[in-house]
Image (cartoon, rainbow, N blue to C red; front, side, top):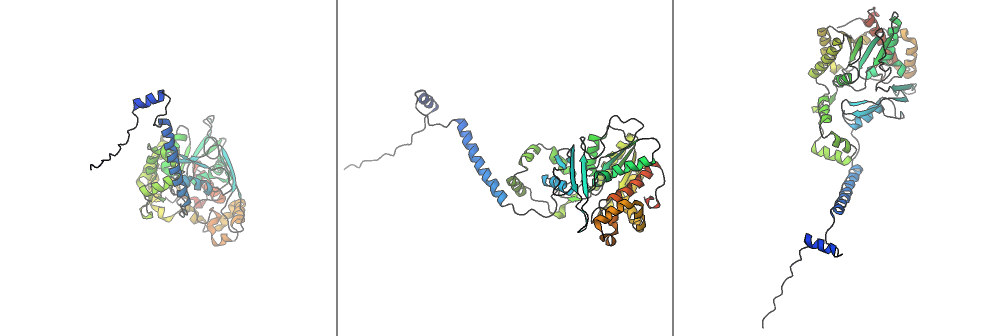
Length: 411
């Protein structure tokens, strides 16, 4: 008997394009998904996949590392806003910026309080006003006549006035000190200080905002931020912001998933490999640019050397060499204050401001006398009394009048 051989049925190939068109014309559905619908399905699936991954990344991100975020990050700018005021200050003082890494938010006023004080000490009010041109205090006025004596303070947080009220910041107090010495000439002092800035940022900031204006004197004070060790130098950050991937990075900067993937692809730099934000040779080069630009405009230059940490001494030493080479003034703030603190009777010269310091620190002043002149536990930023003393020293130097003995040169 002959066995019947079963044949397997071949799968039917789908309709050809022509058959699909004919089926559509005859009113019968075709076995094809329209391209637009297919794209929508793909978008929904991708959104669900990446959305789920983002949620998982946020739920498992863990605790944030200790200490402030690295320079050049969005978190650093947010931290900087809180550092310059307190948790209830309202709007952020800074915004990220492609050219300068960050800048002050223009045309805002923040009312807060100084959060540096002894337990039980007075928490004194602070008002921070940023003008519509994007810096603190007096705005540049094109209407100034040639008789107006104009001074630009270009520097970091000490010129900006951290953590002081508008009336106590260095440029404002310097203007008053100069007015008391002037003979029939109006004086305008402008505050080009921005907290956290290095001389590399200051060079760009000057070129953008002040290079086209006339100043009789330009004070320069950059150092502590330049020598600050960070995972990346300012030059590397500028290159990153200038790259074509900047726009994509801005879109993804709020994503925990993107941050996690970036960490996998580019592991964090270990602290032992951190570098100065502005290496010493670049530091000198950028200072030379600012000095040269000022001298070309026939402005007098005074370098205010405000080194806060002993390990930054190579930077201050190079600054003094630079000042001698270009024959410009150099004023060593910390060294002069160290001498002044040997005789605390000098505090009586600024009695009202000394009362403010006592209300803030109380008996702690006996243990840490430098707090008569400095704003926080570590002597880095000058307080109201320190600012007034420094303004008198610099005003006397500008006007060519003798200052107190504590203000003598130590070049």
